[in-house]
Length: 168
Picture 1 (tube, one colour):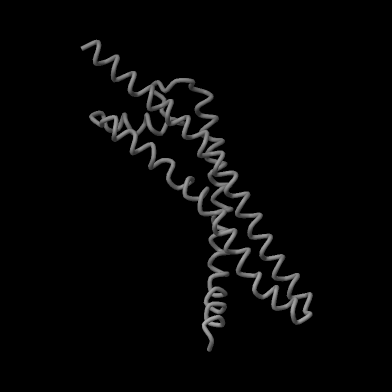
Picture 2 (spheres, helix red, strand yellow):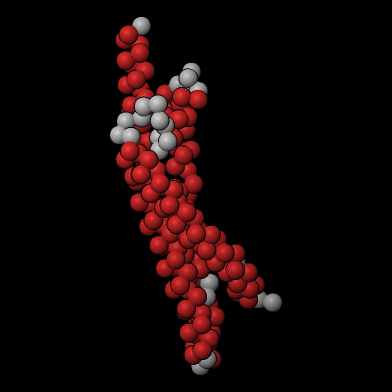
């Protein structure tokens, strides 16, 4: 078996898992969008985090840990954004992988004159990249807005601590 054939066969093994992860990321993007809309609704009702911390996850975390530092708050804010950030960055990469893997069979089908194989392979390739880009776009927008929300919460928490420190 030639090295080229081995590389081709190895790359074909990754098509199904890649498509499965793209499907999961696509579903996750809409789950995250629903959670985002719910958080927006909760935040809309309470412009500043008072006793009600729904919609303000960093404030809720800080209230559960009264002695936490500013660095702890910053790390927690990053943790809250971690999964959607990873989805935003990984989805386009997997879309590219899922586009390139079917290109081998499509080109082989083209050289053999098998247009049905070309069509089937290109359908998989372009569908995968479209779904992954939609997932990335949704999660990117969510991460961008949540990053601002968490920065606002962090600033509010730090100003509350400063006000308590001045009062003491």
